[in-house]
Image 1 (spheres, one colour):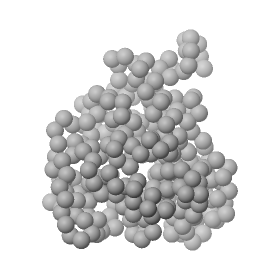
Image 2: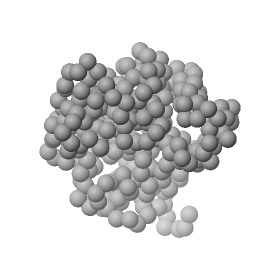
Image 3: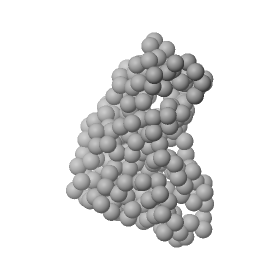
Image 4: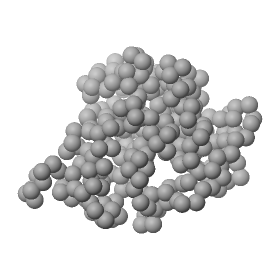
Length: 274
């Protein structure tokens, strides 16, 4: 059974910050049994990551409502399509939730700072806009923490690809989505959604970036319970993807299932084996 102290110890061993912004993607199942259950895990993570002024962010996506005759995001509901931990964060009154129609997040920490962090999400025109919370993770040199999940769950990488202006990632046409606020007011948003011609979901290929991230020291490894964890530097990941696409020319390295070639990310690559 995983205890609070063990979680603290593991986070400290990873060098996890307590004064920064951390976006937490997780699989509760892989962590295993936790003393005090999922609620204790949330309490522990909030306490750790916000201790020195940091913000702890939990994604609470509602893209499952696309195409349904309901608000894409209903702020009066504790609703998310990302599993039990995300639902728990939705219902916790200590957090504030962004008004991103499809890719909202709940933010814990100093209330004034958290409110300032989420305020632009009500105006986004893409799900992970560089002007959204996801973009602020980059602008404020934050981190993505993957707990028991891989980079196919690393939503922040959509933001990186949008910052870099990569082709074949976003639809050219907008769709009208709605957000129902807690007071019942309905706000409409025109959003361009993800669209790629060579795969149904480009995030399924984000795992291909991991070897390059590791080569450049963007990842610190650890565990929470039985779940392998990666603490990922947001600025570093952006720089690595930028390097890959600078070297790839007209070829999109995510256009197939093959590993990204070392020459696209290894410094001073000379063709020899790593």
